[in-house]
Length: 91
Image (cartoon, rainbow, N blue to C red; front, top):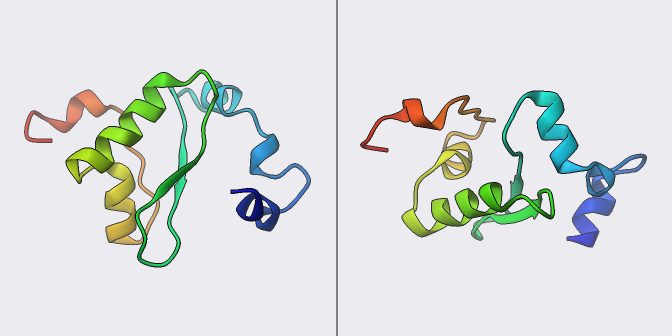
């Protein structure tokens, strides 16, 4: 993770940005960043230390094998889900 954050550059670098404040500025409940190396499983690399919702949702995606992080990897583009409740019961 340290190597990845070094690659992202400085200043300020992703590791120096407070995720909870970024989420607030964006009008979000939480914000997380996951990264994947090659064909390995994605790994959560950035979140607010007290953000239990974001880390829980990331873990749930990997457990269920579906979710916006995995959709992003499959579609090869950024994905934003503004209201998870609107996704429907099938999701």
